[in-house]
Each structure stands twice: as C-alpha cells, then as structure tokens.
Image 1 (tube, one colour):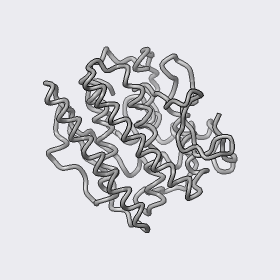
Image 2 (cartoon, one colour):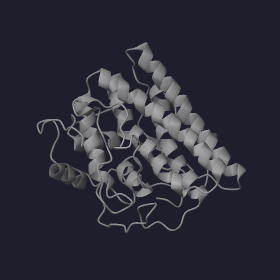
Image 3 (cartoon, helix red, strand yellow):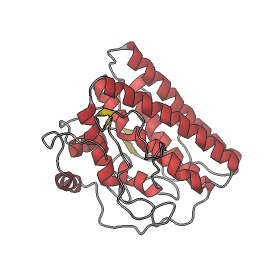
Length: 296
C-alpha cells in the first residue's frame, strides 16, 4: 500500500468525489466491463488501439511543446478522421534552471515524434489516423489540482515546479495505459513499436518522478496519485485495485512504481479514459468533447 500524506493536506475520498461532481466532470452512466478494455467498447483492432494512443500523445505533445517552446503541434500533424478540436491554454514556462528546461525540450520533441510516428504507422498500414480532439490545458489542470487538494488556481505553466507537477498528473497514466493495451495488439511489428513507446514513456515518468522527489514534493504528488486512484475505476476483473503509487513507499523513495513482482501496473482503456476525463465517462477534463476514434 502507498503512504498517504496527512488529512490536512489531502481531502477525503468523499470530499474529492463531491468536488469532481460539482465541477461537472462526472457522468451518471456506468459502463459494463470487457475483460481487456474494461468497458462496454465494441471489439477493437490494432488501428483502434493506435488511434487511442494517438489521442493521448496529442495531449502530451501539446502540453510539453507549449511548455518548452511556446508552440503546439504543426497543422499537418493534427488532421484526420473525427472532429478537429482546438487547444485551450498553455504558454512557455519561465524555467529557472537549465537542467529542467533541457528535460522539457527533450520530452517535448519525443512526444512530437510519437505523434508523427503513430500517424505514419497507421497510414502505412492502410488505416486513417484520427484528428486531434479538443484539448483543455487550462481549466482541466486547475480542476484536477483542486480535486486533489492542491492550492486553487493551479497553472502548470506558471513556473518549473508547477510544470513538473502538471507533468506528473498524466505521465504515469501513459505508462500503465501502454502496458494495459499490449494484450490487445495482434500485429507483432506494431506490438514491438508499442513496446518502444512504453519504454520512452517510462523514461519520461521516471525522470519527472526523480526530480519531484529530489525537490521534496512528496505530499503534492501523493495527493495527485490518490486522485488518479479515486477516479480510474475498477480494473479488468471488476476490482477496485490500487494501481497508483506516490513518490514514497514504506518510508523510502519510490521512483519506479511496481507491483509485488517488480512489474509496471496495467490500466484498461476505460481506466485511462476515466483519468483523462477526470472522472467523466464520455468526455471532460483534458478532453472536453471526448476522444476521436472507436475507443472513447
């Protein structure tokens, strides 16, 4: 089990549920579960999985590119099937240290390349990449931070500390999402590529977690971890598993969150959606209009 900060720092599960409900980020419908996707989604193919990943890579790329360079993805890299959405929020971060700035540069370019790679991989195999959906990088972060019990008016672009906490909100989600999607992939070449994406996202997550731990931001990150656990919902077996870990476990640094076998946790696509929708079931949070594609 993870260590939790004091109740004075993090609100109770009940109060967080109440906040998320008041913020309009939840929906009344409850999906039935599928053994692999953890939702009522229809049967999916490799293109559906790649496009699901592409939606999430759009989010990460837009977040980091704005923080590092003050720009978003190029117009040629966001078109496709479904409704093309706009991006709200995001400005260049006034970094105080060269090291954090260079970390942001590297991650931003990686995420931009992930978008390009996934779009090319889908197209090369006769599929159609989805367009970038509507993305909110402003109110979504403020709502997530408030639900986690962090100070109101949180802006991940205000300074490098805020930038790191903003990155922590969804970095671990990408890792567990890629791991959970692996059994759904049929084509071995695509599976190998997904393994490469998972590895890079794991590097990114560990980089962010290491810096946050070194800066002593353990209570803030634990609050975010608790919120992710609260909203992600049941696992593929219908159990409400504790899949998230903060930066401290049993009194020691916990840079690499793993299960009892030393393996990365898996999240179903439904659990990932619950987090990026901030508790919603069809839309909300970082994706106000939902994702494009079959898995949404």
